[in-house]
Image (tube, rainbow, N blue to C red):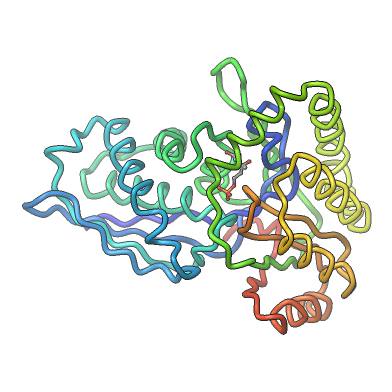
Length: 314
Ligand code: PMV
């Protein structure tokens, strides 16, 4: 049997903008999706035991099948003749926005590689997971699979000419508490990404300006993180949420949870990931503040993940 894991992630700055070459900042969270792969005699079977938001696994089934086919082709395995069983589990919840699809792709790729004795380096795993991500996100930036493969806090910039992406580690003084709140709405990242591309094409003037602001914001956020100026990081997260509202990827529920987190003292809050449902995140340094904000969101019936950004080794 082959085993593998992939990290969940939270995008702190630049989701959607990264797809078009703007830099983004992502942190792995301390939860993983785990996979086990065992050779069998008849085709590919999947047993998905991830704890998920209701409907997540069903909703993503077709995309999951396509992603595994893409992955196998990239690994030089013919999907039609491949025969193995996949088990999926781990402590990463299947909320949209936590990079669950990328985490599972990395976990499965690692488990297949181990079962078939392929001995693949992380760069290759990342490449395979990127191909798999296309099934979920259409034209993904690669930020999710990069975080799922390497973990840590990362600066990411997609190379728009097809060359290697920029991936740099960001070091911060110490890990910082955040919360991730789920709207419970299963969002379709692919449709959200396509929507932004369409609107950008229709309204280039407005969008060029917003994309420029997103780029400046990413650089300021990197500096604020390195300076450990958490108030500034929070302010920039608020500003990032405003830009995401402008490109129409937020929704009523996300805005509500963002407002709630800010009202309870979060340093900053924004949607994270594809939007249109899925998750938001709030910067809540210290256990006390993290608890207060998490409780306020849970009290309204939403699920919350308490985690940290900037954890060196997970
Ligand atoms: O919704 P998620 O967790 O898959 O995050 C998607 C992030 C996007 O920037 C919207 C897409 C991408 O490929 O970067």
